[in-house]
Length: 340
Image (cartoon, rainbow, N blue to C red; front, top):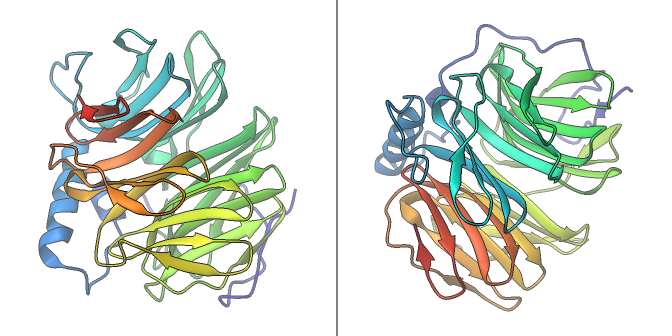
């Protein structure tokens, strides 16, 4: 397969190479391509939280391990959470248990297509796969930090992140069931998240070298940069191809209706990182300082969590049940409140 990136942002047509370009992988904290114009206090807070993820816990209690970065599940009784120091935890509906990853690298993304097909990404290009019984190393490329992962099936997996080559760039990996194909994305500084409505409609969100948000959309072979005006992006999710949401670092949540992007409250400088939903009227967004917002199909409203921890990721099994992964713990929404 040959993947090409459009010239909308002055990107060069680019075929997937055997591996990414760039020097040795950098520390996780350096991967936060924070704008120089961003609020210094907020930037320092985010960097401190990311650095905390890099410190393996000396003896975590499986029920409340610190340093989570991502959460996903196939159902309310099959939930995975990953984080700093190679931590992987599994919830079976009753309790959290440890799962041996075999690595001490920071794990930053998790997604699956079924209980027996789950993918995890992280530092040093780490990619793990769960087959229903155990975790195995699917691939690794030391030049990269992989921040997000999405799959339409076992033979169609997309991982995105950062390659710190000359000037730095967003990085994409694709698994077709047989081999991994890799590409830097010229014109970008990072790709933080990936989502698709199907195998022929894949979306990626990140930042341009000009310091604005970047949204790429493609059919798996050809990708175009959609016109977008806003802050660097951290998350993307949709219920359909015409109902897509993106979260920005210090910017508005924006919605794609199939034609245009529209900013939605909160439109002020809120540092949002992750987003997910179960449908057009049930969408969650999380971010810095324990911030959580919920969309009911009409308005976005704040949902107090009682924590000031960074919340990196959110996943929901259905209305009334959601999970948020943070620097200190995992929180669960029971339909009326967030609880540890």
